[in-house]
Each structure stands twice: as C-alpha cells, then as structure tokens.
Amino acid sequence: MTPDEAIALMPQYLDGEKAAGLDKKIQIHLTGEDGGSWWLKIKDGKAESGKGEIEEPDLTLTAGSADYVQIVTGKLDGASAFMSGRLRVKGDMPLAVRFGTLFKPRQA
Image (cartoon, rainbow, N blue to C red; front, top):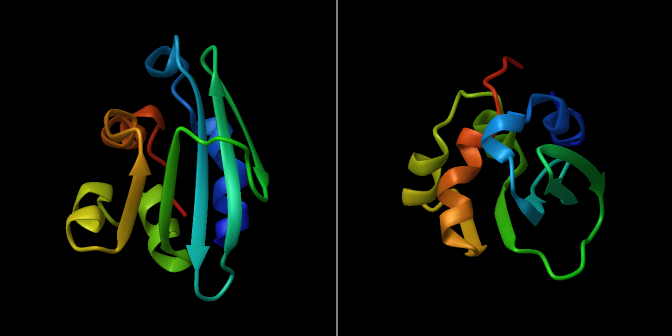
C-alpha cells in the first residue's frame, strides 16, 4: 500500500462516534520514496482527505512514508514511532494522542 492509497482510505475508517464534535485539520508530511504532503479534515464525525497543503492545520505529522503506512495499517504503534523519533508531531498534542484511536483498525 502506498501512502497515497493509505491516506485516501482513512476517511472510510474514521470512527464517527469517537470523532463526534471534532473540527480539526491535520497536515501530513511524508519523506522518502512515495513521500509528499497530504491533509485530513475531520468535522462532525466525518473525514475527507486530499493531497497537498492545508491552511492553518491544528496538527502536523511528519514521518517516513513507509513508517506512516505501517502506523495506519496497525503494524507500527504510533506512540512507539513518536517515542523513537520515527513520527514527529507539531501542534495539538491532545489531538495527536487521540489521533490513532479515531480510526478503526485495518489491514494493508
């Protein structure tokens, strides 16, 4: 799975109940092969994603593209990736902590 595919699929894996009441914008910067910039918007229990930059993100996540795909497919724990420096976070730390729980697990 490429980062483009993984991020494009994220909205359908959003747990609407856990995301209820959120109105957040997330910027994702990925490095390495298949790297680039993507965004996620979460509002009213729904999400949408796209490629490129988003204005005034609440949270910015930066990781290697392969690491990010492993995180979103459940093969790499996001907290462990953060603690080891493989995932960098800027902005809304409570949202960053909650981010992984907002999406239902899926397989690559």
